[in-house]
Length: 161
Image (cartoon, rainbow, N blue to C red; front, side):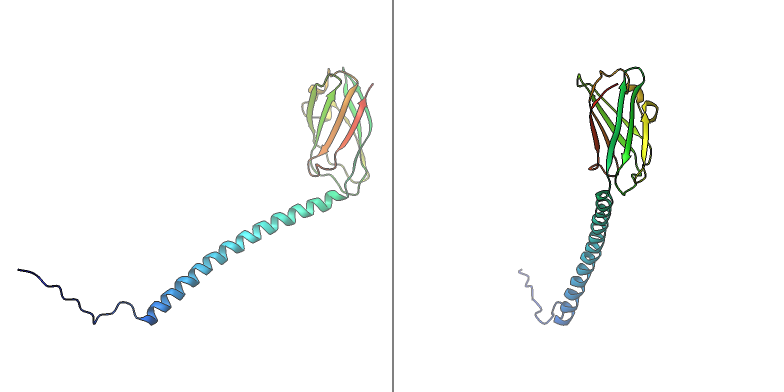
């Protein structure tokens, strides 16, 4: 015996009004999620750009100059570094030296340098200062780079006794 399935066409699914309300609610929910995400995304990137711009503006007025440089293999290097700009360098300085045989020595100077001031640096002021002993004089280059303004480095060539 065959069964007949009778479709009841009188029942409807969701009313058009309810469907419209559901679609608008889902759209508003998605807009809210996108709004919250984009707001935090824009705020983070805007703050990053502001911080970088502030650093660049501060560094614009910075200047570094190596006034004197002497080197002796037994006592090491002796530098006078001057801040010739109007910005205070408040972070460490990286120092990199290349001798006449292209041997390299690197270290960090952990001092601040106020605008218009100078500081005397010797081997004891440099981390890994022993690396600066026994280089071959004359030194080819001495480079001092402030970590907070790396574009404002100072370089000295021909550092001798």
